[in-house]
Amino acid sequence: MNQWMELSTKVLDGHELSDQEALSILDCPDDEVLLLMHATYQIRKAYFGNKVKLNMIMNAKSGLCPENCGYCSQSSISEAPIKSYRMVDKESILTGAKRAHDLNVGTYCIVASGRGPSNKEVDQVVDAVKEIKDTYGLKVCACLGILKPEQAKRLKEAGVDRYNHNLNTSESHHDSITTSHTYDDRVNTVELAKESGLSPCSGVIVGMKESKQDVIDVAKSLKALDADSIPVNFLHAIDGTPLEGVNELKPLYCLKVLALFRFINPTKEIRISGGREVNLRSLQPFGLYAANSIFIGDYLTTAGQEQSDDHKMLLDLGFEVESVDEMKASLAAGK
Image (cartoon, rainbow, N blue to C red; front, side, top):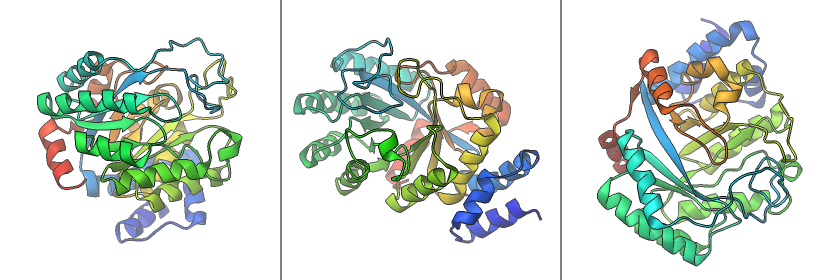
């Protein structure tokens, strides 16, 4: 038995990785990555079998954001030529939900730019979500920024299942990425979502000039937060943002990162998210030996892979898309 299988067996027995063990995964020799992914798959299979969850984003409000996040084309300091618009109407959100349903997507993610939503914007989301739940039965995830307690309560009462607010990077690296809000602001929003009964979704963006220790630290912070779903984004550097031209990721390293997140958060939904197409490239299929969830379609301001290509990839791998009925059952079970 090689060291990666030994480590995965220990994790399945309840072992939590030390920083040294975590670093060994990120430093895995390239010619051992297939062995690492095989070992990672043993953890993934134990908790999720060959099921894959599908997610789709609705960019309900674009640009017009006062924050200064260095990776984001929608920020106040970005010069990227993107479409900017205020919160779309209810019918647009419902149209997106129908498309998600038709593509057998389990989770529909309503995303809005900005520091946090106005009460009017919450009203618009609440109104749409009630009809989405009645008509399509989709799991709904909202990502609206920093919430107030009464807003979180209203979203929960309307039927929102999950709330996304990413940590993005480690606490020590946070101020290198943004200074218009604090790392604690992000942690507190995730905690507020949990307190309101919303399933917490929080993840990371890798490739923003962080150290390997930063990647380990944020993976462990997400474990401490007990995030149910962890989106792992890989930086897709956009011209006109402060991180323009940053391209430090290699496909094999991205696989090591996904393995690390599975080893540290063995029971959680690990989702390959933004940037997978441009960073994993031809190695995208291997990522699903660690992750059990992907976004299909486009992201916020960048294009994704064709949905038909995603479905073909899953079929070729022998993975099975989790049906809406299965999603409802797992949701009822608190997963």
